[in-house]
Length: 380
Image 1 (cartoon, rainbow, N blue to C red):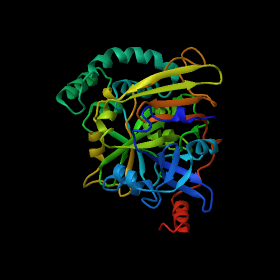
Image 2: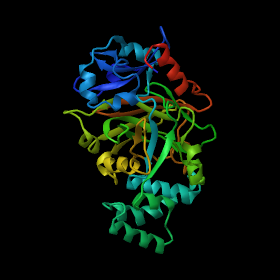
Image 3: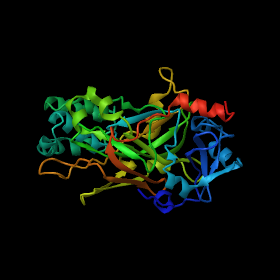
Image 4: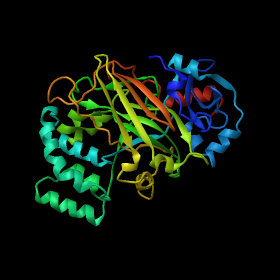
């Protein structure tokens, strides 16, 4: 895959504070925290050797701006080497599910179809008429949502997905393990047994250990609709696989020119291009989210749960493709070799090529390896 700087960066590339990680081989192999300045990746290791520590700074964007680090390499060089890593390290990686009405309907379809893509079309027609209009503008946990629930129960249409979609408590699951997400330009993996799956283009919040949202980036929460549709208990198998989570290219730190309101109004475009000539594209409009991003974060922090190393939180998507690809009634599914581009004007473009999890490079550099690398560089 050939990536260019123009492919990668936000429209206002010089206005934002873009931080991330890049792999450097010598003298001590390992990731370096970095900021993009004038087309170069500048070392932030002496300010914060991990992004978990950087996000916990009192004023991350300002302190990054004031730090004079050494030049590591050009962005072009990092892209050519495939060295741009996911812009997170020690943080938990979690994802909010069914946060949009359209994705809620599709989750119900998966459940009722028992993971059979061929049965989805008829169920979609049946459920859209009942749920689509009823869910528009419904606030989860509100009296209006409770009334919708009573109607659905009376019609025999209640679902565990409706519970988290319009009920008081959101669905937030573990997407992958810390250090296992892949970055821009890497292969993203499907389980080799999956035959019904799709990309989920999302915005990902960077959250400090105290629960403060400090920035945002893009993510692909690749999902296996056949696995999860057979049973919700297969969610870990449907989500947490080798190379199944992509995040990047950079975290844009909040400052005077970019904040949570920009996230709330963001438009995320996705385009899938197959080697077979198939093209699918769409938009994820964050203005249509049913739960405010700050509310989702607030449900995760408190007396009952803490994140001492911070959190990366996927916000969910309204993009659920179902146009037939292989045969009539089969719906959309990925094929190896698909090129996936997820773009937001303020955050840049996350680009990955689809493969299977057994063919993606294995995950070998974990927390112990990171600690050893930092120790060798005198940063512990």
